[in-house]
Length: 250
Ligand SMILES: [Zn+2]
Image 1 (cartoon, rainbow, N blue to C red):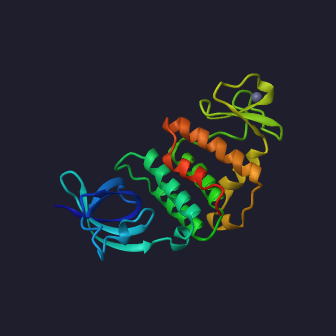
Image 2: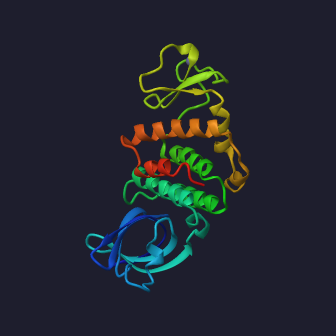
Image 3: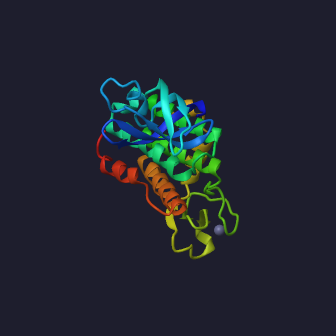
């Protein structure tokens, strides 16, 4: 049985029997994979904390017939500040679900791993979770090759200015108001959204906690990116409903 170590982030966990858990983890070295954490639900188990969602862990695994087995774990970061608020947890779970939905098993992508980990540290630093999520969506979509195009009209090439423009997921970007009827799936948004997208694309992650966006701009960005992601995945992410349900909470 081959044993190996990996830097991992726990994307999700499900209970198995009375004592065990099956983890879906995203590793820097091997991409996404599933592993059994035996005894992780026993009181005092060393694998208990390491199998919590969105924990960053150095894992030692052995490859099994069906699933790999987690044998030892060293927690590198448990993100205690994120766990202090329902909103922090909701957004962290959203980042995990986003990665879990977009990546296939055993397709390593160190850049995506680093971006996810970096976004988690941004959340931990107290940055606005909504701004952090939009930052992560834009950067992860670009890494995955699904980057939406905001700067110019996809039909005529004109720069998108301040008037309204239509965002179409099937086209993968914006259509200006001069270009006639946009596709059926398009939603109208203020052209000003482009400047916020550019700010997020160029942002250093450690500076995100100083970012303040108007509420309307945040709402428009969330709407456009959610629409784009839903089109790409062909389904809505479950954690989006959870985020909506706690939107009124601090
Ligand atoms: Zn146009």
